[in-house]
Length: 225
Figure 1: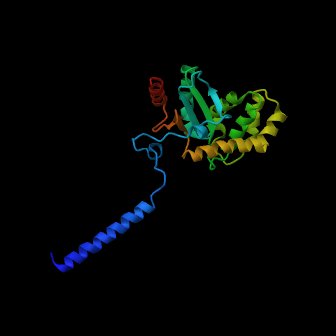
Figure 2: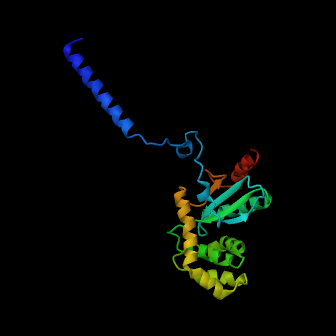
Figure 3: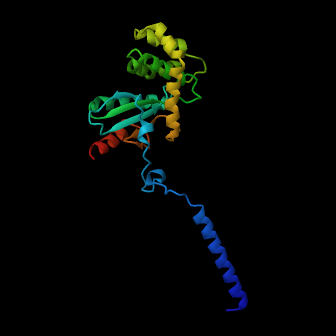
């Protein structure tokens, strides 16, 4: 080995040692968990305390809480409306066996999405959350994907449900109602929700098209555990 070769190898060894030291010094103090990285190939598990809050709307409740399905939805979203019949069918089939939770995730570009969620929330204060939620999807082609306010349309729905109209209007515009809807959306953003509908089944984000058959398969798999 020539003197020049020896010098070159020595320099390379010193450089490698310095690089290794820098990497060690900048390593995080706490290891990244499998849930954060998804190192097992599965979607990460959502933080339970954020996924379902004490005031989250449970459309159906299972006594044993073994399986919980959470949907972040936008009432003006056509894909959400397409998933709606399948979700309703699953709720009927798994009544008492699966908890279904509805959470608002109005997309800012949808002119009436947040207003629709507030109308559902206002109806809920008079015990009519579910009928209003269902009416929104059933009538979506009439008011969705438009750049004009449908406040009067939603108030009309409230009249059809026989609600106390002054109370509905007060609740619709209340800051507490606005905050309630946006709190759901903020939680969804924190959980990585990027579009609607987004489902979580026992804390794991569902991937693929949320068809009736696909959701049923995922639910059955959890029930069998």
